[in-house]
Image (tube, rainbow, N blue to C red; front, side):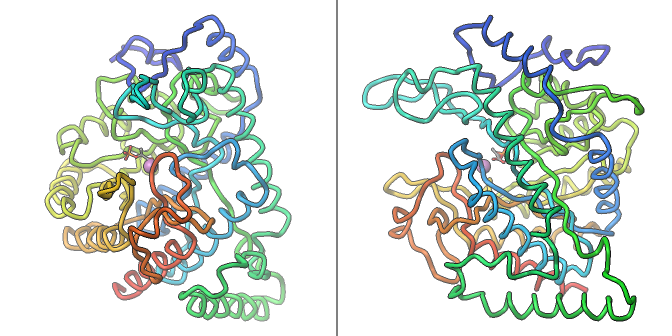
Length: 447
Ligand code: PEP
Ligand code: CO
């Protein structure tokens, strides 16, 4: 580890998953340009999120983090963004109802453009091509031109993130997220959904409670009737993250101002690696994916490096074991963290340990396995005297067929109908809402 941290001190350490740009001078010019552009988020917001995460780690609120596995530049459209917000708002209201706590909403959006890959190359039709690493790096089409990392895409990614965030902020501020108007969040094609009744019933009760409160207060329930979103993405491309790491006038420290909540993916969690070095010096709250690849002693080392002062709200451990491994893997982690007196927020990602490939070669996940891992996570935490403080879901507001199961019983034969993900399979709108309803029931049952 470097003795003194700086936004670029990671450069002295092994950096996994970084693209190989053929033109290094152009790459440097793109980073210089990026470092002069204004930030996407502010330090006030980052500090506010950290405070909320500290509250969540004390059990006072519940975190819902969700969105695409990878955002695509072509999907930066008003309809896609609005649909994503709709499903996230709907799920979060269901979770508010179930947990009886405020829900902190964090999107995997406005910057989730870079993906780690298990292989640097793949062979397509006899041609050896660099793997697709997300629109920030290259394009998925199967030709050398598309797959060659292009530094200009870093600037396009920053711009798409800014456009996305600008629209989200305008929608939220302009009344889209106003609890008095739940009709704004209806997804037209989903009115016949098997969960529609249960959701509408719940919404009615939320709207009625709000009206009741306003009648008693005699004024609009300011603050409680508006919904905020924070942004997050995997901090994978370290040059991109470094270029947006800034000091601010009235606060000490360095902030990554490309997102509120960056996380370290499971493939880049080495305590000796460049990603951990970069993350240790920024003031943002940071997520760390943990699972079978990160045994308890590694997780404790990561916590020591990333949060030596044991500041509440600084570290979120996002565990992703898989339904068949969580029983063995999670309890020792919880015990180790407790034994060392460390304050962390535990979130369950029930997606990434449950990815399978069908006999015909399609990547999928089963709704039941996702639901079962989440359910086990609640039980295991409770059994260990801990608690699960949030969920992390890959989902979309679109009507895709990428995961099997759910109330409509999607089968492997249905997957081809509307499979569009270039990377991981996401829950569609109905499956996401169904999962939220099941989690809400589980939380309500635990009280
Ligand atoms: C992801 O969240 O999309 C991801 C790649 O997760 P993990 O690092 O846990 O595999
Ligand atoms: Co993913």
